Length: 489
Length: 101
Image (cartoon, rainbow over all chains, first blue to last red; front, side, top):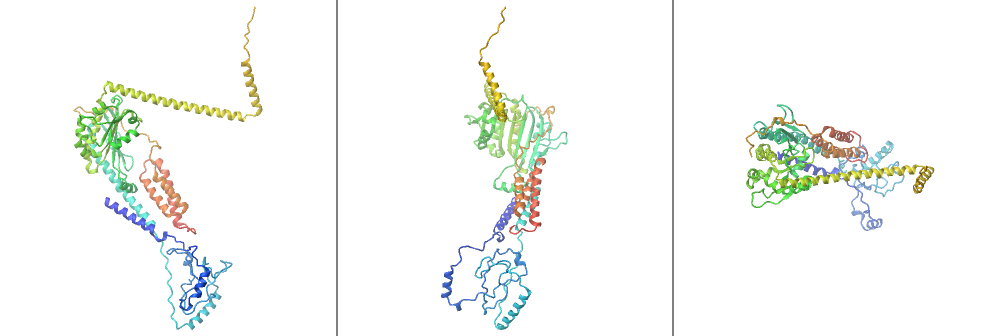
């Protein structure tokens, strides 16, 4: 398959190269300014050279070709005879008077020595033609001994180039073929995953009571969201509300994406979102990823940025391999979650060499942004449809960690720390909200003031005077000393 | 790594799948559809055959990657219309003087 597509690519590159180099796209301008010979120089040359040695020119008029070779003009297609095509007698030098005159309609004044912008010759009147033919017959009788030149063949009209149409049409055909083949490949990968992990007696069937995206027994296992996106849902398990697995496969169905992926490779990925019960998960923020990805995660993800930091590997105990980084809120949580079992099965030095190539990241958080706060996220790469068993140990991490986190309880010290951090974060969030509200209020007030000022500006001069008078009266009243009236008996 | 002896399944806790509502703003941008519209307009306005052909190719890509019919179909149909109009004007209308295909 890869060979086929590499052949296709090479074919398209060659065709595009041919397209760019084809002469029909190169429009050369035949006229170059500034290269006309000086008149004085010409006269000197004419005097110095013996006229007998010069070969006779076939025509005194040179015709500048206004269009490139290969592009036919409507003028050429017409039945007007070309002066070059006529057989010329080498013995008789044509006089200037014999040279074809331009049509009077095109130019009011015509200079014989002007070589630029020759007008198109138009067929003469039939009377003129008959007189010319008589003269021609006379000249041919005189020069019957001499050999007549063979007429120069008229260049045939070059057929229109259909390179663009051929290239684009063939690309579309290949695009359509690739759409169906790529679609089938993606479906095969998704189905092989489902048959390995979601059918009878498989890991998810043993762990969840409801499998599939529909209701009832015969509900479909996978939901196809796009040609390269498949979803699998499972529910009915302790400690969690449900699990949603999303397979994001390569865009094999799209030829352009496929060509792009040959340059910038990408993997088929599967991500598991486990929605934990609120009472089942303690204050845990924990992540494991490859070093580069871990740095990116810590910068991008809000919860990791606020509460967690990258941990240094502890001394005196087994730990994850050097390629991986652990991000956690506390060392205690990290030590408790990276157990001996996990190290033996997946994250140990030897086991990671075998199964680690498909591991991308794990992220557990009780402060996840979105609808579900408490979530476990797992991200793995998918192998080929034939080697789906290679990720069975990684997939087994999902139910293992659901149970591990469901049972896990923080120590009192770690809990108090975590709660303090969360309350602080909540206060900050509240402050931000308050600030935003105050800003909104201030904006509203400013807008109201502006409106009032505009209204005042609209009011007439008299109304303003009245208003000022009222204001003055009010101020005077305020300034007057208060007299207390008391009734005497 | 094996699960404990007691069965972890709880049929009473099972919740059927409800697809989350998709916000059109959260959907990935349909670049191919946009490029198709641009090439389609260029093909119609400037009478470039290559532009119209490229518009059709990008329309095909946009159709292949279409996820949400309600949101994507408007742009794709517009791009397709421009692309077909471009091809029709390029191949079926008389050539204007001074244009190169």
